[in-house]
Image (tube, rainbow over the protein chains, first blue to last red):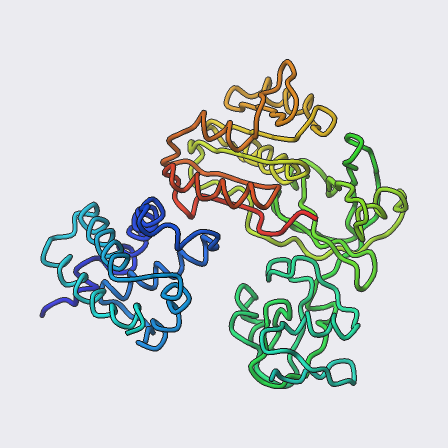
Length: 122
Length: 322
């Protein structure tokens, strides 16, 4: 019996542990934190949680269309590959900090990577 | 093209980006409301026809959601709707008698109320205070249920305001007023009695903090408690003697009044939030309570989070004190 990625990473408890670390990294990252100015922190944290759940292979309701619509206003403000790369770095650093094995980090990164074109509206 | 809202026997148009509340107010209907941000629940309505949006039901109790209650201030309709104000039963209104009115300084009136019948709450929660059916404002509770048998509000006079000048000038001891049930999740929970607690308040945002600090002590909180209260001048700060006495009586309580536009002995000079963050640069493991000026609250929330406090450990009154 092989466990799913979500189970191996640690399920919802892992997401809860990751969300504060990840969000703190994103807000501290000068390359991307301008996109989060004036955003309600609790609502944003809920979105980060949904994003991390998806990246961890957990249950989610995201569709490509949601990804496009949810980021269209940011694309209009200049969101591009460099910003997406920064988020990917923060994701990997968060998982490393939580001592998630490299193999699982790579799997989570691949799931997040699969949203790139939708997020960037291409 | 928006949708049609049927209310009070009339049809009203609602713009594509307009909320149900804004549409009704624009058409001259009188609907109670306060925060316009989905927090205070004073505009609660029931949809008799047409499904309310998900956003307009976020934060409502399951039982209310199932019966199609929603918050018109957060509902940009996606269908034609027929709506009605929520009845008293849903709003849990309570009548309360004014038992004391004492000015705390030139701008802030302490109002003590005795609810008729049972009223359960946590120190730091807020109530909606009704002047009549359409004028309502939210006020935080400064009292502590285990210590006091009255409800205490600190009402700052806002010139031109709909409710605060009336409370200051017209409301009299012996008058009866209507209150909502206590709302909000900014209060003390005894999860870890040794956790350091940081309180930052400006102006009458001290009210809930005054309640929460005393509630925490009453529940046996042992960890350090730091309270920073800020106003612009000596004339605006209040409860200084009471809080100094509280700090003198409890080794773990540290109280720092701050004045941003005046230097005076015994007061720190500067903004309360900036002084607090300068003195406590590492907040990992701390819990924080913020109340007062909305810009201060938002900015401090972010700084406290970046200083290491978990998001779930940062409590702030979400409504605007006005």
